[in-house]
Length: 431
Image (tube, rainbow, N blue to C red):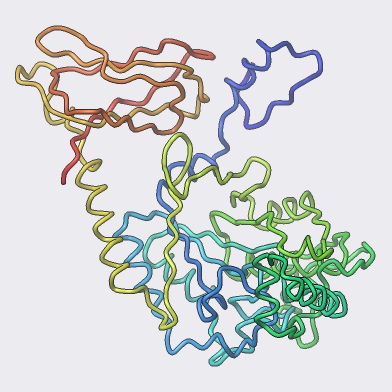
């Protein structure tokens, strides 16, 4: 069996055969590169920054997004001090407000004071700082809710409130906005027909027309309804104007499902379009992409730390946050920047002291370890100091107390196939 990034499970496969296939799954080049970017700073910035909300409604006035300045270089310095290797920006959250001057919606920075192209400034600053770039484009879009349906829903929410019933977050926000109409063109869940559409869909006076006509920009057709075409045109804008990017985040959230407003996502076509425009971009929740598996509280075992770092209304990251980020980065570098085993080979009689052990598999051969033990040699005797199950790209074992030893070894107790371990490291934490 040859290693591959995907292997189909057949009806005739036995459990042993399925395990064998799992042992031969290897990441794509883009997935492997993603796993090696172990810290991502997620920049949550947008209309919610100015309204103080977690989720917006899509009825906000774009003029509320009023930046006195935007110091994206300061953001990048703070992220790098924390040890980030990639940054990710919310180009559009669930409220539908777009942080670049999109041609396809009035609910964007195009209608804000100064018309700041936040996405463009962000990507340029990240590249200058040597950071990889990801963008978040929410499929949910409150600005695109059909106006009549939204108005009926708001009345239903008012009755619900009058009856003393608890309200959800989207319902509370709708009442805070006093029933204002969504800011977009009513394309989300409007029941429009799926038809053949040109991508990109050129608008009057489109500055890309000549480049599309002579082939400098790609063009093709898709089958989509009104909202599907709108979303794909936004994907096209992002990937052709600001890409290629290393990661693109979609999201499964639908805050208005309880209101009876749903939009069917043709995700297969979305993923195909992304691959066509930017083949090395890994897609969150996409095929052969990446997943969110708790990596906002933890890191390791094939996950990258996702650290949310929002700038403030003044266009800068607060000084207290900058200090915390720098302290975090120093703590990580002080502990994991040195492998104490390299300082003292096994022949050294006094040994070395450590309280962390780092393990990793070479995932180019697959993830195969099922159970292992770590042993340390002290005074000529081996003793077990840690054990576990899976390893993956990286696993850090925190010991209950420091250990002094002149050698460390790993015993693989169970594996799906022959494992390929990377060199073992040991570290000593610092206050």
